[in-house]
Amino acid sequence: MSHSDLLAAVDRLGTPRLLVVGDLMLDRYTWGNAERVSPEAPVILVRADKREARLGGAANVCQMVRGLEAEVFCAGVIGSDPDGAALRHLLHDAGVDSSAVLRDESRPTTVKERFIGRAANRHPHQILRVDHEVREPLSAQIESDLSARIAAVLDDVAVVLISDYAKGVCTPGLLRSVIQAATKRQTLVLVDPARGGDFSLYRGATTITPNRLEAELATGVKIRSPQDAFDAGKKLCELASLRYAIITLDSEGMAVVEPDGKGQMFPTRPRSVYDITGAGDMVLAMLGVALAAGAEMQDTVRLANVAGGLEVEQVGVVPITRDQVRVDLLRHGREGAAVKIVGQDDAARLAEAARSQGRKIIFTNGCYDLLHVGHVSCLDEAARQGDLLFVGVNSDRSARNLKGPGRPIRSQAERAAVLAALACVDYVTVFDADTPVDLIAAIRPDVLVKGGDYGSQQAIPGREFVESYGGRLHIARLVEGVSTTQILRSVAA
Image: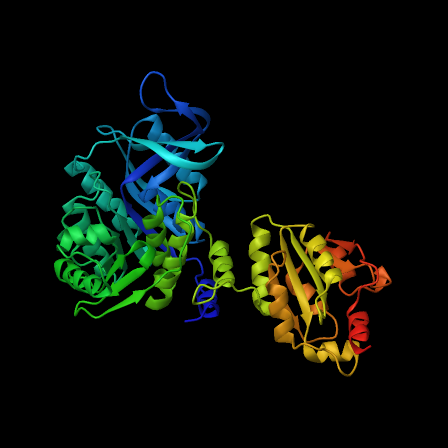
């Protein structure tokens, strides 16, 4: 499975509708600089400079689904308190349908309060978490009312996601009602199970997605190898009558296991892990959205690996978007090696994804037959005009048309590889036309850069197009007395 295949799978996700059921939480964050140890006690003193509230638990799964551009109904329970009102407001702002969210006068809204300290104004780390919650099961009346609300929207969704944090919402009765009603409609049910809970409560679900520790606790199998994961997955399938089990194995990726014990490992590439908070929610959201869109299981799990990996690179819970997934897929090949040499279609996708994140796109082009100080100076100056530098390289055919017989000296593959090795260059695309006009039209750069030796600015290919939508032309400083032609003459002499 190539990254291009996965990109196509992302493009086919569409806008499916999902239902998220589970424990809704409000996450509060206090950020500050960890300056010293308090004189009052052996604890870190944090000088707070920012406070914020975010969606957590099943509510976070909802916003993760919305971040992936799918529609979502949210079903759960909040307290009749200011925290519940704040949570509902955040759901509304995220575009989540909360008509199936009930208020329970007898219980508070679950709140997790985290204190994040920065060392020397950087390197943020969680110092303390304080939970405000009750874990008693819902009353019979609230359970019945919530089941009725869920049943009312089941016909409108393709997948049900159950996010069980063992805070009392996912009662045996509610789980049985939701799973049976969904199964009757042939609707897929994916469960992120509660740690240490009774997984037989999820009997009849399509799959469950425990992490390594949760799977070990539920099955008694210590997972040290792929075969251990397959053995644990088989037991999970037996325990809950699943179609398959998906075990997340942190840096090792995921294992997908069928009831007969046949399994497959889906490795993930190494990541810089800043915070694991929300990674499981992100995996569940991507699995649900992809399956709701009709994606194949292999594509679905690989996309979930990417989304979960992107999440752990964030501090705190941050929704991952399709564009971020696209960029990650385009930047990294199947084996995880950085991919800078891309085709025109991928270059256009990369540019659009970066533009949606507010990044400024730069484009320049040339033959780059023998890379010299003039080229490097121009490329470095180009990169400083924005955030992402795309370089167009003439193919062997177009370079020959431009420079004459005997050129280029190096093949297009060699020239592209040398450019891709430069730190200032983000992406390289080989174009076969005599001018880069079509490539420029595909990328739509904010800044078009050309060397000072080109001649008339009016004749620069693509200038009029870039300026037509508000882009600009930048003429790079010329390094006098240096050119490929001069280098070749000196060598011949």
